[in-house]
Amino acid sequence: MSTRTTSRNQLWLAAVVLPIVTILLFGFTGGMVQLNSWISGIALGCAEAAIFIFIGFLIHRRKAASAAVPFFIASGAIIGIYAVSVLLEVILLGYLFKLPVSSYMMIHLITLLVFFVVLGLVALVGKYAGTHEQRETDHLTGKREIVDWIGSIRRKLSQMPVENIQALDRQVAELEETLRYSDPITHSSLVEVEHLIQQKIAMLEDQVALIGGSQKEQHHELTEQAVHIIRDILRTVQDRNTALLKAKAGST
Image 1 (cartoon, rainbow, N blue to C red):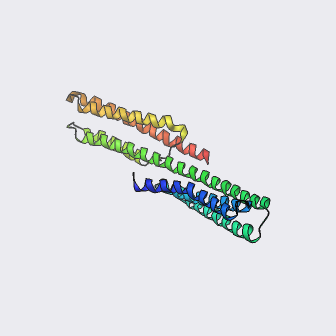
Image 2 (image 1 turned 135 degrees about the vertical axis):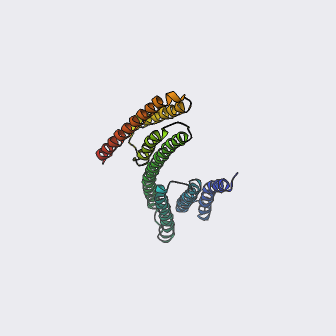
Image 3 (image 1 turned 45 degrees about the vertical axis):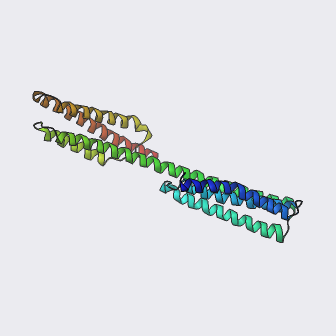
């Protein structure tokens, strides 16, 4: 078991044990009959649990998406404010002013409710931001893989002892550059087009392999077919880029 896993498990244990100990200590110090003491213990126990759970969550999500980091900071600040508020309520309202049980309990319940609502909203926004960043990362990775794919096809071409292969290589280079500078962040309406482009690139790869394994008299015909496939891919990519611009313009 790794050190990080051990530390996280210890924090989860502390998040359960320490609040219980706090509740019992406050209950016993109040003579077991003073409800305000039990309420104070429960409130402080909730604050302790929130702190330990948050620290454990940070350890678990140490490599979180960068877009979610500000929301982790905001969550930590909210938990800190909640813990300080509970402590002040216990000291001021529970011991100095000695509020009635009903009022004292209501104040702690309101504090807890506000804490949950605010923290929940921050968590939802943070989750959305992290998901959005992960989606963009996936798109960038997919684009890089496709460009590398085209690059591998070019390398195969350069190793072929075929006459006049330079013209085909220039076509593949043009395709590579077009894909390299295309917007990688696609739109949900273009998923089928993206798959179609990949299918056509696979056809091009098969065609290049066919050229390499063919007889000399077949090279010209097969090369022309490869050029036709490349031009078809370029048209599809251009159509995709145009449709993507329109889709993004329509969504703004």
